[in-house]
Length: 123
Image (cartoon, rainbow, N blue to C red; front, side, top):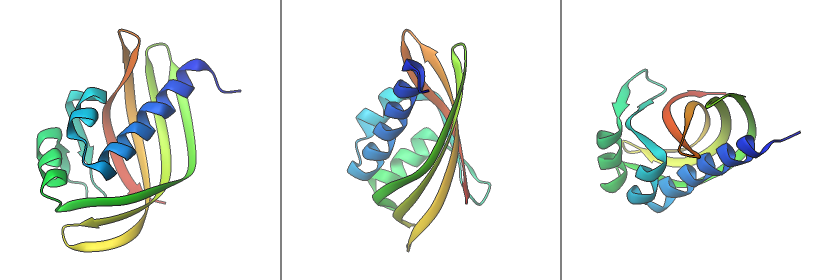
């Protein structure tokens, strides 16, 4: 049974995917922590500002994301979500449909879930 927090968390994560595709940095910034980091499949830990710059200049261009599977675990005002998506993207010149798994840590602040970080891998 999905509870209210899980529904809100999935909504925030889906907003992030939409923002990545639409290059909506303002919208993405509202749901990502100021210290947000994205750990790439390569192991590179990228700060939010650097990642946003990659999205703006389209060296990381996202075309679509199709959700395959997700799990959400909530513990008070903290949560972990695992999302598996088929992501059509061009990353540093190489376009592919990536089997992307992201494990995200979130925190609820003033009634809103904020994504603290994300660790990407393949599934």
